[in-house]
View (cartoon, rainbow, N blue to C red):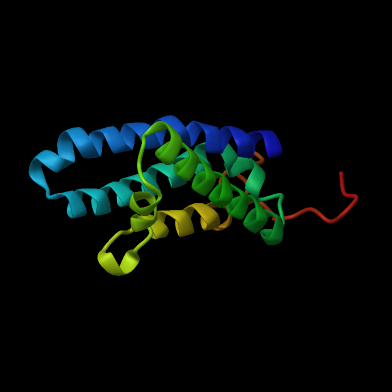
Length: 150
């Protein structure tokens, strides 16, 4: 599952770049900066959940909630490191500009995306188990296997 998890996070990078490009090129033509950013957070959140579903749906049902939460928190940490590293050293943004995106009181919704990212593995597990899809020819997944089970 570790490879799938890494693939999922890496696959989100071009999706996020595309989402940001659409925000800058299209949304900001019809919306002010703040509403465009807020809508962009919503589309990025949906895109990430769809991506996690497509890549991880057959794997999350076999994992414990604790392990899935650790995975989500790992994605969260990687995203924050990537955002600050790329944003500052490649894109040339100041640390203050980068931190400003975390100010939910000022209407910045980036922390909402980060919360969804951290919870995505658990959310997808719940969705897959509720829908009864993913493993065994459409049979309802049974959840984590006991230790030592084959």
